[in-house]
Image (cartoon, rainbow, N blue to C red):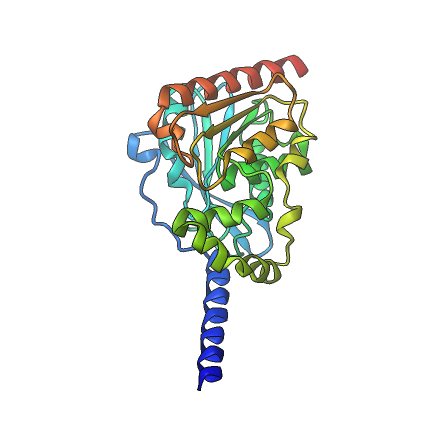
Length: 293
């Protein structure tokens, strides 16, 4: 009887592990809760196809006499609405914006979520559409969490995609970010109990989380300005991840620490500090782009 009970508990535990792994790759889709149009900005529905079978929903927000195009990349379990307020303010300041839902998020169709690895192709498709829409303007990427990592990885593959990059709350190595979610939700006990999920999810997604390395991508990007933003109380993507990313960047690169802020909270809790960093990066990217041209 004891062995039967132990076997049942093991079977139940393995079942939970598999379900959590599957849900990690197919996260719940958050409803759209905001948009630039809701703030009275022009908003055009667009679709992107980064690869066959994947269709990404998005918005194009055109500014008259725009100085640059900003491509905004949302975080895990979120959608393009996450950065809609940011896009609205950028539009007010004279920048066109492109927002989109990553694969397996929002209204996009097809694919599984790899928390940054395959999403790099989505970022590349968005940048290429931005080039088509505004061929003579610099392109700047602003990411949030997973979106930051995907943007850096995309630029590591194709450095000419954009002229500037904002890394807000980005991990450095995917294998370190995954336990952060469990710690964020259930503390250290959840990290211990769910540790096998990483291996199962990696097998299902056909990827190695240890090789999804933002720092390695950043080493290829000394030709564009980059801003790093991070909360000093981030329990999901810990401070050491931001510090590791900074090691790959030139000494002139700035990191903005949001005091007392957790994961991606800086833009909401310390908006003046957030926008100072954003505007400085955009100005530097535009200036560098004009210098190269």
